[in-house]
Picture 1 (tube, rainbow, N blue to C red):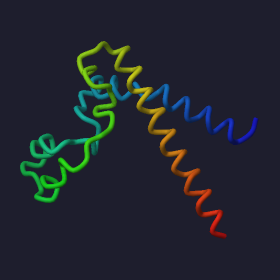
Picture 2 (picture 1 turned 135 degrees about the horizontal axis):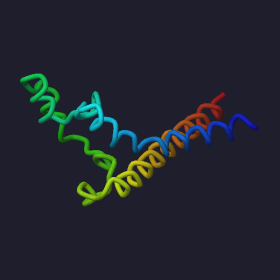
Picture 3 (picture 1 turned 90 degrees about the horizontal axis):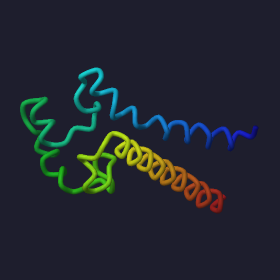
Picture 4 (picture 1 turned 180 degrees about the horizontal axis):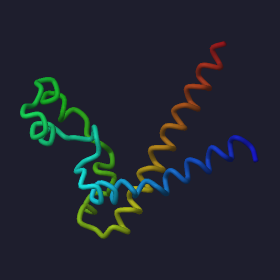
Length: 110
């Protein structure tokens, strides 16, 4: 099997495993995933909100917040799992596309 085929199979497997992010925090009573805190949650964890974070927190909003479609926050676990997989696929395609585009641009310059 070619390396490229193994790469895509590996990415597909990771996308299919992405709904574990819904199950494991509840199972381990972990709360939010590390590093995915919003400004309000950071304020609660640390006790204050750093000034720079407060200013920049509204500059960027994720295209698919909380890895779910708009209005799907209260859907069933199976529906949210589909949204997680969709988010994973979109993110992977975006990363692969950017890497391929950069590779082509950089290879033309040499």
